[in-house]
Amino acid sequence: MAQEEDIFKKLISHSKEYGFVFPSSEIYDGLGAVYDYGQNGVELKNNIKKYWWDSMTLLNENVVGIDSAIFMHPTVWKASGHVDAFNDPLIDNKDSKKRYRADVLIEEQITKYDDKINKEVEKAAKRFGEAFDEQKFRETHPRVLEYQAKREKLHHRFAKALNDNDLNELRQIILDYEIVCPISGTCNWTEVRQFNLMFATEIGSTADGAMKVYLRPETAQGIFVNFLNVQKSGRMKIPFGIAQIGKAFRNEIVARQFVFRMREFEQMEMQFFVRPGEELKWFEQWKQIRMRWHKALGLGDRKYRFHDHDKLAHYANAATDIEFEMPFGFKEVEGIHSRTDFDLRSHEKYSGKKIQYFDPELNQSYIPYVIETSIGVDRMFLSVLSAAYTEETLDDGETRVVLKLPPALAPVKLAVLPLVKKDGLPEKAREIIENLKFDFQCQYDEKDSIGKRYRRQDAIGTPYCITIDHDTLNDQCVTIRYRDTMEQERAPIDRLEEIIRDKVSLKNILKKIAES
Ligand code: GAP
Image: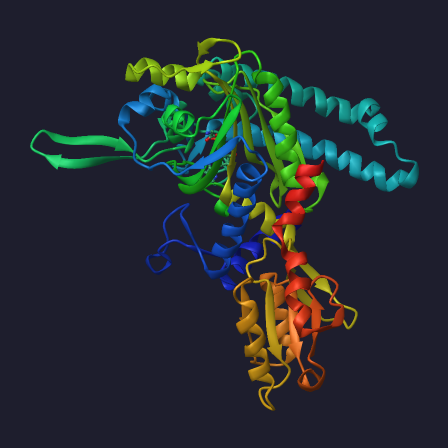
C-alpha cells in the first residue's frame, strides 16, 4: 500500500510538472479540492469527452445530446430531492478539530478487512505457486473466513444504518469499532450531523430581493426538464436517450485524493427513457455497454469491477457503480442507476405541467422510466492517467517515466524532431508539421539530444516521434519511434498521415464497442 501511495504522490507531481493538472489559484496557496487543467491535461480531457460523446451519439441512433445551463430554477432542486436529501453525514473529532464523513470512516474500516483477506491470498499464492486454487482458498481458509464474517457483520450493520438514515447508529459503529481520527489518534467524536452539499448563490438584485439559486450538483436535471423539448423537437420515440457533458458542483467535506473528489468537476451523463416495466432489462443492457466502453480502452480488464449499491438513492430501484483500481484502491468512476419515473413525475408535480409521452404502439400516455449512466470526467481522467503512468528501467540501466496512454487519448499525437538544428533538417521537420497539423496535435522540438527529447515526449505520453535525419532529404523517409516498445521503423513521409491516422483513431476503439 505504501508503495502505491508513493506512486500516487509521484503521479500528482508528474501531472503538475508536465502540464496536466495544477492546483487552482496556486499563487494564493490554492483552493481546496479545486484544480485547473494545463495544456496537456485539457487535451487528454477533451479526448476522453469526445470518446464518450461519440460512443453515445454516433453509436446509438436514438441518443442525442444537449447542453443545458448550470443555473436552473430553484424549484428544480426541490423537485429532485436535492434540497431535502442531498446530504453527507458528518462527524468531527473534538481533539484534532478535523471533520470527516462518517460513512467514509466506516467504509475504510470495511476495506481493512478486504486488505487482510487479500494479504492472506497473496501469501498463499506465493507459497503454493502454480497449484494454488484461489477460489477454494477463499472458501475454506479459517482466517479468511473469520475476516469475511467480520466484514459481513460490519457491512450489514452499516448498510442498515444508512438505509434507516440512523445517524446515532453510524456514530455507535464508529465507537464500537474504535475507529480513530488519523490526526489525533483518538475516539473523541461529536454527534453525526447531516450537511447539504449544494452551493447556493443569488440571481438578480431587484428591489423585491434576489432569488436564491444553486450551482447544479448534477447535470441530469437539465436533461429531465428538457425531456419534452427534445422529444417533441426531435420527434424521438421511446426508447431514446439524452446525453450531456457539463460542470457540476458539490461542497465536498472529504475533499482529497487529487481530482478524484473535487468541489467543481465535470460529468458525462445520459438519461435513457424507457417504457415502465422495461427498466430493469435496459439497466442490465446499459451496464454491459458501459463496461465495454471502459474495457475497450485497453487499460486492463482486471482493473474494473461492478459494485452494487447497499443504499439506493431516493430515486433509484437498482444501482451499480463501475469501479476502477486507482493507486488508492478500487473506487467509483461511474454510476448506473435505474431512476424509475421519480424525476419526471416530481417535475410534473412541482411545475404543474404534464410531462408524459404518448406511445403510439401501446396507444397510451405514460411517464417514462429512466436508466441513467453517469461518469465523472475527472475520475475517468485519473483512471486513465494512473493506468498509464509507468516507471521503467531500460536495458542500459537508465530509467524513464512514460505515460502509456491509449494513442487515441494522448494529448500530443506526434512529435517531429530534426536530428540536428542545421543542414535543412529543421525546415524539413516544419514542412511535415505544416501538412499534418490539420489532422493531429503535433509538437516540434529541436532542443537537447534526441534521447532527451524522446524522454520529454514519453513523459507526456506522445505515442509517435518522427525523426528527421540527413537521409530524409534524399529518400523522403523518416524514422517513426514507438513510445511503448521504443522500436524504430523507417517510413515514407507521404504515408505518415495514413499510418498515424489508423493508430490514433477513436474509430477503432468505437468499433470494438459496437461489434461486441
Ligand atoms: N446524476 C447522478 C449522479 O450525479 P453520482 O454517483 O453522485 O450520481 C456520478 O455522480 C459520477 O460523478 C460519479 O461516479 C463520479 O465519477 C462523479 N463525481 C461525483 N462527485 C464527484 C466529485 N466530488 N468529484 C469528482 N467527480 C465526482
